[in-house]
Amino acid sequence: MYYVITGSLGHIGKPLATQLVKEGHSVTVVSSNTDRIKEIEEIGARSAIGSVANSSFLSETFKGADGVFTMVPPNFGSNDWKGFIGGIGRHYVIAIKASGVKHVVNLSSIGAHMREGCGPVSGLYRVEKAFDELHGVNVRHLRAAFFYTNFLNSIGTIRQQGIMTGNYGRHAPLVLVHPTDVADAAARELQDPSFMGKGFRYIASDEKETDEIAAMIGQAVGKPDLKWVDLSDKEMSEGMTRAGMPEEIVRNYVEMGAAMRSGEMTSDYEAHRPVLAGWRSFDRFVPEFAAAYNAT
Image 1 (cartoon, rainbow, N blue to C red):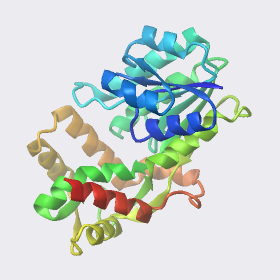
Image 2: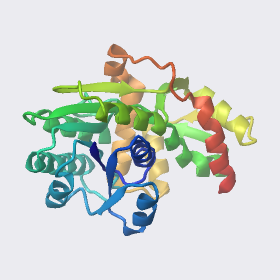
Image 3: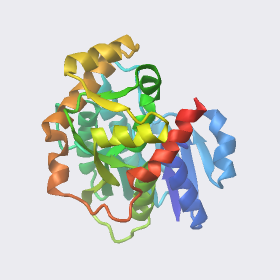
């Protein structure tokens, strides 16, 4: 079979492409970075260098594919983040129609049931709705939980302030996922010929409260007293602004955190709770975090 993977060789794209190649499939990896060509070829895949904001490029790249894995790359320079995300979804729709692809696995997120009020994830709502309007195309949305790797962004705060923070609420329970579990799920969906129509599934590896997350990470990095400090929306906004984040990105991240705090972001997940057994638990990620922490 022949598959096209977007997302370059990121936390999901690399293990997904590697797995499909090892299982004997032909794979093309889409990347905007020419520096990735050699690494893509080293895993046995072909590279397609271009932008997912270019529907003509995508249309040509998708031609002949038995399945496509789609995702929206981050863009911290947008003045309309949700609009940017929805726009990438429209480029994908144009390319899927033009290329004749019939099987699509799309990376989405917990909270994508929310039309508004969930920051960038409400942009993914727009992507899902656009894909669901495709006729004669089978689409599976993978609504992934909060990536373990997002905690790597906390390394600076841990070093400088000795805390972890968020505006998710005190003792907030977080639904978490290892990116490799998402890659494994995507590989299964791409290779499943029985999937028909439109649908979604939640991908989660573990559930932990914020206090427990801080304690586990603190123990691993030699800071056993590491605490999680809950921030108000205002405090979160001010902290991100001081760190140099653009206003649009700050506003959306704070909005998403508030949706997590209220429970609305995870309400549909709770109604369709997946089985967590067999996935990579958070304690398996902690050594990865410690290695990254000690390397900085």
